Image 1 (cartoon, rainbow, N blue to C red):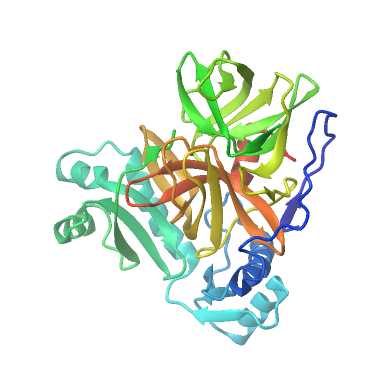
Image 2: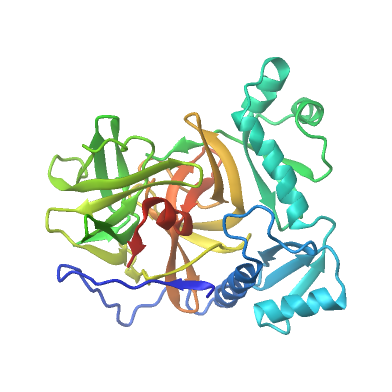
Length: 383
């Protein structure tokens, strides 16, 4: 299955919200309607490659995928033989799938990307340290068949030094970027304060979830962790007050997610409505990955709903001294307080959750944790 479907028993406190007669900008947009089919095709193909949490499980002929401006999926192949193209058509169940010849396989690109990302863990000195410290992050630009290195205050001198000290691969391109900062019944995207002995911060509510704790099903929601909430005394409160809302039962900060699960203990319920939009999330469906250049949405307490394009879906970067990988970098706007807010996509008339906001920078990029990774790291079930 390429669309994940999860089921669970809902408590009687769960709120069911129906949307009747509403019309949104996505309805009737040909590119977004096409994108829904593209996301389905993309995940069906990835499922056959068995790539989840594996860096080199792609066929050697496969060079990546992206969604074009018409919302159609384009599959890149290093070797555009009749057999390879026939295989792509079979795996996507689309006899008319677009294919495009590319120079590098995705395995080659990810190999270079991962070698560069290793520098985040290295104890470098001198000129090498100066260059490594200016690397904001690195990801695979599948649309252009390159490895995209984001650097702070990019210059020709820095590019030349990078090629000497880090990597001189012809696969690498460069982008000027800025350091990322943690963007530190009730609807998804509304505000909450988490507080524990390791710190506190104001965040946004992401998606509804359930966790089994000591044999009991606890309903609640997922938000960002930001490293503050590992302590078992961490609590959730109403935004800008000390009225209790719930308890942090699980948190993860590092590797492939920045997330915390809050079990609601004050009797409140969490609806599946996205902020003030009236949009209803189909909470028990999700996708392993969203293709490059697809449109995604986010909702947070500060900037409300914004949308943008996926730039990389395997972004690696370092923040607060902690390394992250397999994150999604987008052009959607976010600001402080939006962290933990829901990210989602529009697929064939449904709004499907995809993750929670983690970080943003002043140049307008936003990073979020994938829902598929959060589920594993927190051992939770969305609903």
